[in-house]
Image 1: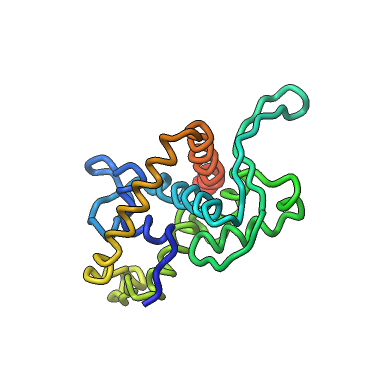
Image 2: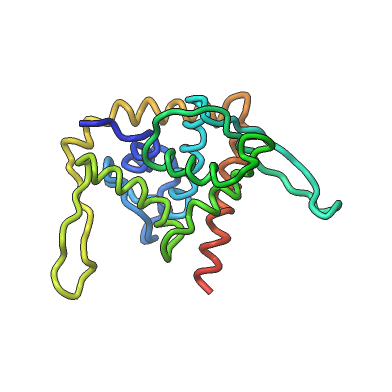
Length: 211
């Protein structure tokens, strides 16, 4: 069986990477642990983790920036510049597809906010548009099954293949440790910006859709 992308591993073990939901609060289930995590944090986290993993494999660079719009409005974020190629799947592949829609991606780069805002445009729910990418990969590799529901219910539900997901536990732990070290290391401020701007890029669209 093929190994899923790091972002899909993070999706399946989501509570290792993003905050869990409060008691009674709706969220998304981490199929590897059974925990429920905050939906918006998961979607943004998958984008941030995907961009980080693309950098780890030399496909992009990430750099914090600050500038002024219209000469006086301060703005800051993370610039994503396309630098290399490689074979990717899951959220990582989708991110590269989105980044490559900008001609300036290989020269001046594009903001992580814009990347997140673009990658969540497919479908009615921006957060689900991101998590669905990981779901689709997990289903295609046999870690999740889509099971048809009865009349009057949603068409399908996701059923985890617990034994198969359990085989990913070592990968999830290694990834979680690396992610924590990245967040707490020399580039901590840049990572903080990466996490906040990917969240904001998706949340802007989510708020618009809730109106």
